[in-house]
Length: 177
Image: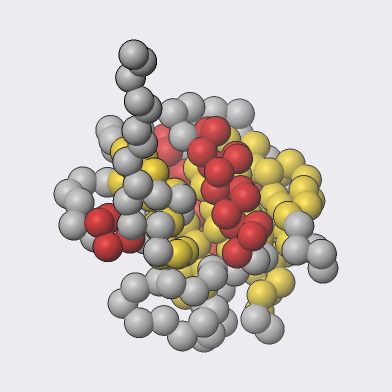
């Protein structure tokens, strides 16, 4: 008689009890260890700095890095950087307007497929996949049909993020190590 395959299913309530860095996607746990490498951290910090600089006069929007977004009762993700233009308390449980994910080889598929689908379904206005090794950022924008459509590949160009009566002329040339 063969073994029965059993997959654990977790909730956001379980997630809140865990130690260490994790993400929870559709009830499945994903370890975020080891910590990102130096280039990943530097690029993330540069993205946050550029966003804060470009949105400093936009009082409705805040910029954060590596914070839990509780999407649903079985999904909690931790984007590298996000912009949210809604009133929030101590937990983020509303959809951010902009999300940046800095791609590591170990997380590429999760960021390109699983999170892409989540962010599209949840209505994230802009999703940016950043590839530090190639110095390329792929920018996707939500269209009227609710689909994330690629706007282009950016290395040193600028892209204007239009959010909540604010405009951020983001300079991709400033984010690389």
